Amino acid sequence: MSVTFVEINHIIEVVFLVILFVIVFSYAVLAIVSIAAMRKHHRKDRAHSVEDLISSKYLPSISIIAPAYNEGLTIVENVRSILSLNYSDFEIVIVNDGSKDDSLQKLIEAFSLAKVRSMPIADIPTQTVRGVYKSRNLAYSHLIVVDKENGGKADALNAGINQATKKLVLCIDVDCIIEPDGLLKMVRPFLEESKKKVVAVGGVIRVVNSCEVKSGKVTQVNLPNGWLERFQVLEYFRVFTLNRMGWAHMRGMLLISGALGLFDKEIVVRAGGYTPNIVGEDMELVLKLHQYMREVAKEKYTIGFIPDPLCWTEVPNTTRVLSRQRNRWSRGFIESILKHKRIFLNPKYGFVGLISFPYAVFFEWLVAPIEVFGYAYLLYSIYGGNFNLPFFLLLFILVYSYFMMVTLLAILAEELVYHRYNKKMDLVKLMLIAMIEPFFYHPLNLYWTIKGNFDYFIRGKREWGKMDRRGFDENII
Image (cartoon, rainbow, N blue to C red; front, side, top):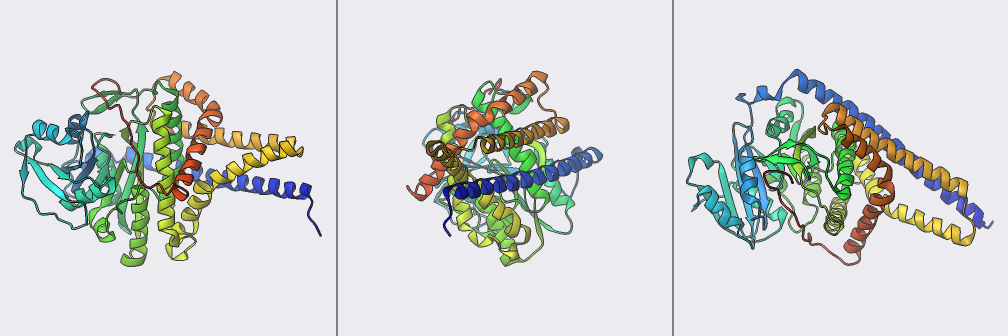
């Protein structure tokens, strides 16, 4: 019995509705879990001030590792900002990853650095280390600068881990601004969890563009001036407030942002450190830790997340730079997923293998090609005279309503708990931007994601790509 074209159309429409329902339902569950977990964290935070930890003798020591490549424009102020963090026992390891500018010379002059003999604590393979520097000034005695041949971010982080002498390692981007009490908040899961081994903790990243910055601290939070940056503010709200918090609460975290991640150094070294020559080193390390703890260590473990805005970063302000970033994110995601494909639907990995990893494959990777197919199907239906207007309108209303619900919920949750954007007009602007985002910003992201897939599978592109930054001064970034 042959199947008519009308029946095929009907089947395709039903499939799209089912996919949409599953996406909406799963994200609704994730949002509910995220908000509940965030409220629980906020109540605990109010009951036990993080400042009480500063004098605790149980605080674990932390090595802050920051790779730097051609950061001469801002490197000195960035290091001064990190030096000002409020924590009793920490060191800073700046890794100059073969910079071609004057980054190293500026550090030497600003902090009175001198080359020293130093034996690495760990032995993760890296590119050649040309020298290790420490300050002759006692005020900077906890600053270490590693100068090495260029090997990429992952290689630079491994070199920093090799030199780190503390129990935990905080891997950051050198140009990020961390809240003064950020270390105290991130270390709490390591102190409070007694039943499982805490191997890593992530934190919320926020957009610093157009904010006032003084002495390495964000003193006034402003909504960015540019439209492109404002779209990214909303995007970061959704990702961190209604996504990663939920996955962390359900023990299914797959990604800790490379801009801010705290790790148990011993576990990272045993797992082999960051994988070099990979563009998605942050996600790949988290998957590697899952694999190590499940298959080698065979210990009960957890990967935590702090929902407080702890780190501020400059986001791209041009489509040229943003397209490179999203292309790299897309390729890095694919590379990490394929490298650890044995986790997929593997019951040995529990919730991660059966739920969060498959979710990432179907709803964070394959959903983009499915959406493109949907647009192609729409055009084909119009061309062939089989366009189903009621179905299209229903689908559009459902998708748009779902998108607005998620975005407005993220804005509401963020402002009710943390209230960083004090100007009422900023919130009004964010809500207005949310209304037009699906028509302007989302198509761009979809294009960059598809291009990332094309570059990975067809062109075999593996390099990072240049990321231009403006840097910040003592006023406004």
